[in-house]
Length: 82
Image 1 (cartoon, rainbow, N blue to C red):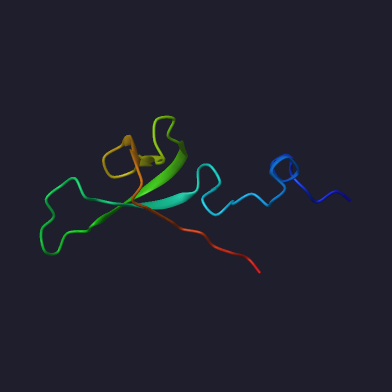
Image 2: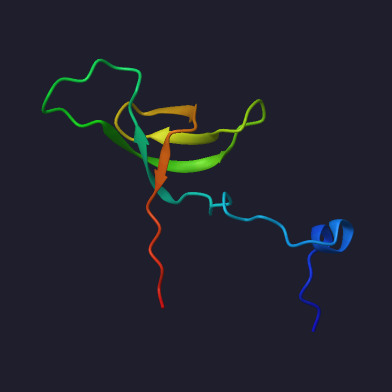
């Protein structure tokens, strides 16, 4: 059984998949745009919809504002079943 990817064969090293996430996974967007009061939430819930073509950021659909936005300040909600 072959356990190498094309990248691993080409570069002779394992690919870094630390920043690869499944599409439509739940995430939280850290809100830095709005002026936040003392007891208001600093995060908005969102859905991961892809990667940016222009920069190293994520495309996320914000469920609070109902707008797709690009940001690097994202926390992914990953549940691992062992």
